Length: 66
Image (cartoon, rainbow, N blue to C red; front, side, top):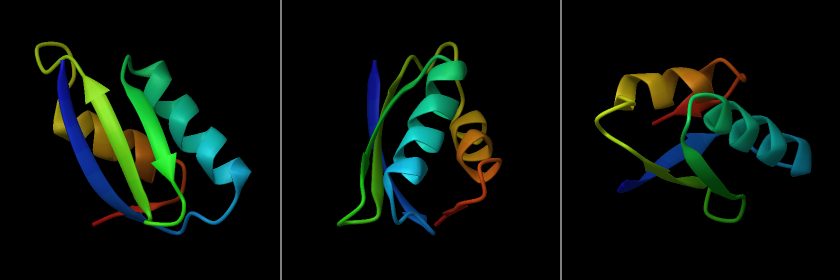
């Protein structure tokens, strides 16, 4: 498993947390949102999931990955 931390803008509430963590779960990644620091810690199998897929899953929920 690989672990990364991504800066994400536009998150402000529990709905944001649920949307992002749910979208990551759907593609097989584990996400942990930190609203205070505007970050998402992601654990994933780099043999199965690409960074592009992770970024796309978050952006499809309406957030900006920096």
